[in-house]
Every structure is written in structure tokens, then in C-alpha cells.
Amino acid sequence: MKLIFATNNQHKLIEVKALLPQFELLSLKDIGFFKDIPETEKTIEGNAKLKAQYIFDKYNLPCFADDTGLEVAALNGAPGVYSARYAGADCDSEANIKKLLTNLKHKLDRTAQFKTVIAYISNRESKTFTGICQGTILKQKQGTQGFGYDAIFMPLGFDKSFAEMSLKAKSAISHRGKSIKLLVAYLNKIDNK
Image (cartoon, rainbow, N blue to C red):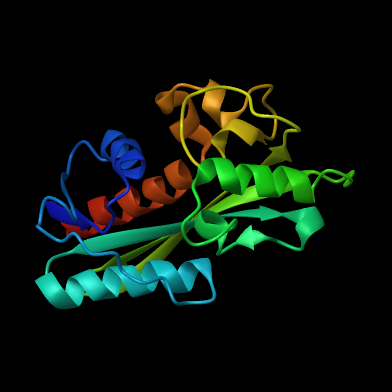
């Protein structure tokens, strides 16, 4: 089954391809789409749906998109939907991490969760799948794997940050891994009908 994953993020693509070996996964680059899809919704779910619908309308192929946010309890759920551009539209992960650690400097509660919503759309229907991974924000970066906030996020029940885990170990417990597993279960179900 051919599926478009509406992303230009190579890190996400590598993670998701490892979780979907039985599908022919096409990235936006593979289909010749190089523009950024504006993320104008106010929720993680809204942005995932917006991206999936945009690509489906253009190519009319089964497609899915994800949006992920880091929700920090002491910051009332921030950065949340603005996680990728927390320190500003043109800032990178380093700037986002620096801003987050600065904002948490005097906070005792460092609990947080990663949330991924996948929106899937085909000619038949549209569905969403949500994965959550709870944990804490570390006081400094640990590890060199992964991307985004991985180096400062330690999942609940572990003594390593996401950036200290192999891709396989991270995917087994991560927000994205959980949402992809729900998507795969759904696709297998409709594929066998």
C-alpha cells in the first residue's frame, strides 16, 4: 500500500519508516512537494488534520500527517502547539531548548508530556490517532541521538533521555511510536477487509 507521509522533516521520516516497513512510504520530497504547509491551527490535532487534508486535496492519495508538541505542566502546557517555533519562527532546536530551560529555571515541577497526533485521510474516511509519552524535563542536555527536545526529555520510568536511547528503544515507548502503532493497526484492519 502506498502512503504519503506529509513531512519534509528527515528525522521524523527515518523514525516513521522504521515503524512502517510493510508500507511504501512516500515523503513530500518523494512526490515533488517542497513548500512548507502553514501550521495555522491552534491545536496539535488541528495542525495534523490541516496538513493531511492539504496534501490529500492536492494528490488524492491516502496520506497522513503528524503534529507533535511538548506540554510542560509548570508552563501551563507550553510550548505545546508552538514547540517547533517556541523561541521564534526562524529559531532551531538549540534556541527552543535554551528558552525552555530558562523558563523552567526556578520551577520545582518539571513534569511534561510529548503528544503526537496523526491525521490519516483517504477516499474512504479520515481518522486521528493520539500518542502520549509522559516524563520530566532535565536541567541540562543528555545524549546526542534524536532531535528537537529529545536531549532534555526523560520518559517516565527510565533513567535516560530520549537522546540517549537507540531509535528502536525510543520508538517502543515514544509518543510518535504509540500513535504510529494505532495507525498501523487501523491500516491493517482496513487492508484485510
